[in-house]
Length: 372
Image 1 (cartoon, rainbow, N blue to C red):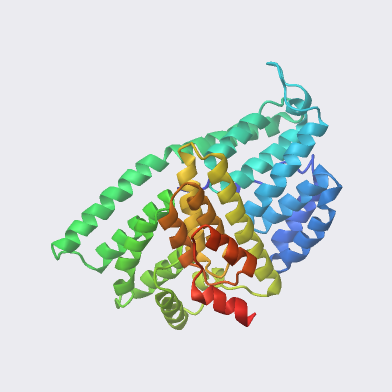
Image 2 (image 1 turned 120 degrees about the vertical axis):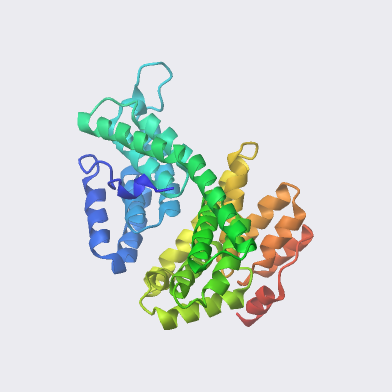
C-alpha cells in the first residue's frame, strides 16, 4: 500500500507552530545532523505542549515516526486538557474548537499514518476536522488527507487478493518447470508484498526461499540480492549467517546500493536515533497489542513486534516485549520463539524474571552479558 502521509507537510500548520516549522526545515536540510536538533528539542519538551510539539515534529522530520507518535500523543493530550477538554455536546467547544489543537491533531495523525496505524490516523483526522476555527484552507486540507488515507486503506484488500493470485500463478509455473528467472522474481515481489501487508513471517520466509537461489542468477541476481537484503532489514532472517552473506555479496556487486545505505549508520548520532526508534517501536506495538487485546488489530500489532524482534536481535527490548505479550496471551511456545531471536545483552534480573515465567534466554545473550 502506498502511504499518502509521506507527502503530508510537517508540521501541518506553520502558522500555528512557527518554531516547529523552523526545526523541521533545519532537519530536512541537515539530515546527517538531525540528531542534534532532536536532542536539543528533547531538552525543552517538558516545558509544555508547544515545546513537546517541536520535539515531535523534529522526530517526524528525522524519520522516527513511532518515537514521534509517543511524543505527539502526549502533546495532544496536554493541549486538549489545557484548552478545556473535548466537547460533550454536538457543537465543538473547548479543545475541539481550538485551531492549535486541530493542527496538533493533524500532526499526530501524520505520525500514526507513517507508523502504519491507518485507522488510528483516520480517527485523529476526524477529531481534527471538528474545529472550524482558523484558515478555511487548513480545514479543507484535513478533509483531503482523510480522503487520501481512506482511498489507500480501501486498496489493501484488492492488493492482497492480487498478490495472492500472482504468487500462486508463479508458484504453479515453478512446479511445472516453466518459470524463468523473471517469473521467480515477480513471485518473490508478490510474496514480499503479502509479508508487508499482513506482517506475515510466512510470507517473508517464502520470499526468501525464492530470492536466495535467484541471487545467483546472471541477469536478475543483483535485483534479487537487493530485495533479499531489504527484506532482512525489516523482517530479519531465519539464518543470521545467510543474512550476513547476502549483505556482503550485495556490497561486492552493488557497493552503492541504497539498501546498504539504509542499513548502515553513518555515525554515532545516526545510530542513537535508530536505536531510539527501534526501542519506541517495540514499546508502542506491545502497548497497542495489549490495549486492543480483544480486537482484530491486536494480532497485527503483535505480528509486527515479532518481526521486529527477528530483525533486531541486538535489541533485547524487542524480543522480551514480544515474549511477554505472547506469554500473557497463553502462547508459551511463541513467547519462547521470540526470545530465541535474542542476541543482545540482558541483565541478570531480566533473565531471572523470564526464567520465573518458564522462559529461557539463548546462550549468546548470556555470553554477551558476561563479556560486557
